[in-house]
Image (cartoon, rainbow, N blue to C red; front, top):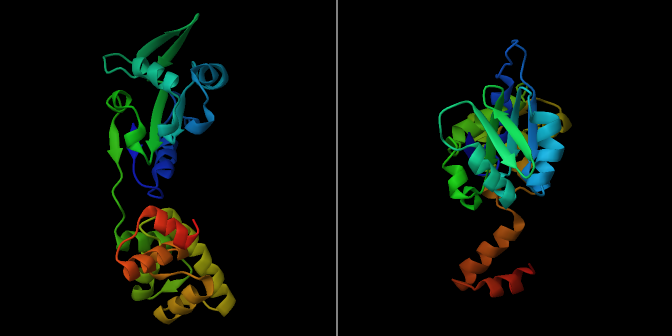
Length: 237
C-alpha cells in the first residue's frame, strides 16, 4: 500500500492504526516496524540490519515513511519483490544470498509527501491511497477532540481551524496552546473574543500565515511583482 498526501494529513498515523488492526495467525496483534527511508543508506544495509534480524520469517507490518528517500539500489530490489504476479511468496536473490518475502506474514506500507520523486515502476506495483485535504469542519473536529473539556463557540472553532492551514498535525498543536491559554485565564470556555486575544499573545497571523510569508505578500502587493532574487534581498532569506 502506498499512502500519498500533503504534510500533516495523517498518513503515518493512519499506517499505525492500520497496523494495529492486523493480527498474527495466533490472533495476537502483529508487530509494527516504522522506518524513515532517509536512514536507509543502501540495499546491503537494509538486508543486513533490518530485513534479516527483524523481518525475515516473522509476522510483521513495516512502514517505509518518507518513501521518496529510498536508495536507488533498494528501489530496484523492491521492483522484483513487489512484482505484480500471483502467489504470496517471493524469493529475492541478491549477491550470494536469498531473501524470502512471505506476504501472508508480512505487510509493507509506504508513505510520502513527494510521490513525484518515487520511481514510477515501484509506484505501479503498489496500491495507491491518495489522502484528501480536510474540510474546515473536520479540522475543527480534530482540534476539539484533543481538548474535550473545553467548550468552543462555533465561530471560534472555525477561526482556529483556519490557522492550521489544512494541517491536522497543526490542529493538535493548536489544541495544546488553547489548553494552556484557557488554564491561564481560569476557565474552559473559548469564544470568538478569546480567539483575538489568543492570536495576539501567540503571534498567530490570519489563516496561519507566518511572518516571512506575510512580508513576501506585502512586497508583492506593493511592487506588483518581484524576482526570487529581489524577494531574497528584501526579506533577507
